[in-house]
Image 1 (spheres, rainbow, N blue to C red):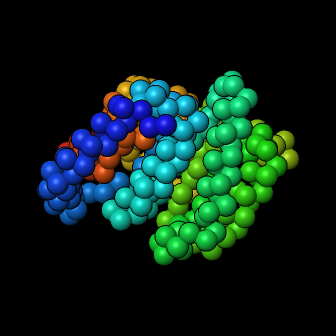
Image 2 (cartoon, rainbow, N blue to C red):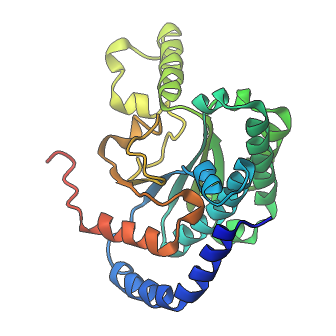
Length: 266
């Protein structure tokens, strides 16, 4: 049953929709011909809090969050962003209740199964890759990931990284282990290990570091997301819960990014 608060919000959105359209048009005119980030990372936070605020079950929050992710990805493609990374499930999230974890994995499996037949994926030539300790995931989800990656393997114009069973520290540890094996096998000298070598052993090897990282739901931290790659990323924290994230919210963030002076330490 839809809560009274949810109905009121729906009515409010219908009333405000014409105003939003005008504001969207104005924002788009401001940002369209300026610098667009190449790589944007999203920390999808607030599904459960959004659901709770509207009287929904937490599982419904994750379902709405999944639909929002598809919507936001379309905005990114339309704006010309080449690489997107979505942080959907961290290694720390395994501490949550079993039923919630299973529900999230079921949604993720559904999402990956949709990718091979998604016309937008093929229209924009999006290569999809899951990053994280994938071996920790259920077999059926791993199989869905494999098929999605195989169906998009020929594409290189745009990339979608889905961080699932992911932790930034775990990523660095895994990179160190790979480097250690190369040293032990005589393929690499200790003095040859530098930042470039480490970057080449990360899950995102070969891709540009994120220009912009966006976190929804009001938390002002990265929570172990791309902690090596984000050294010079622009960070933006918004109070909006992920399922409520709007195109005007996104475009305002892009406008803020465009107004910043990125000096990279120079």
